[in-house]
Length: 179
Image 1 (tube, rainbow, N blue to C red):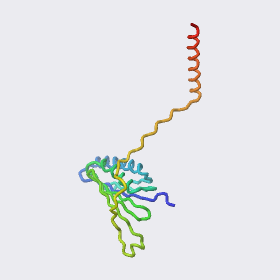
Image 2 (cartoon, rainbow, N blue to C red):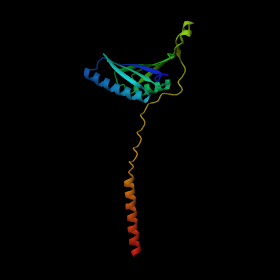
Image 3 (cartoon, rainbow, N blue to C red):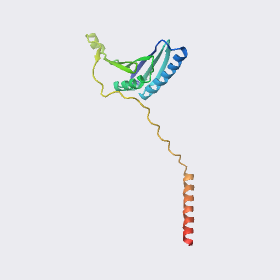
Image 4 (tube, one colour):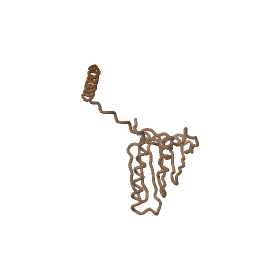
């Protein structure tokens, strides 16, 4: 059984006008942004590559739904920055569905498709645009809050504190009983 049933390919484009250093800085920032957002979606094996004025990304997921892909887009689109646009293609290994997302200028668009089986395609059925609405609205992905560190347990210190507390109580009782 396949461990990673879904893949995503991405293409982030940088408009003309970036200096070489601005392009390098933007690419570094975008890689970090995508890596963070993809990890929140459960991505594994994230690979990046540079190509002229673009960043290419490829990754695998054990499972990702249409809603998860929309959450990824909602999280990324507002952090791309001016002069940067992107497109992402999510597909399952059975080649039954494709989700395409186009991001830029603070908004994103989705196109979803259902792919027929070979038997259906040979009978004349074509790739169909999927117009079904998603189960819920897209939301921003946030990293879970770090769990508070558990206090270190030192039984010898706890026993020592209890003895000191008991000694202090005994001393107070002796002072009160002397009167």
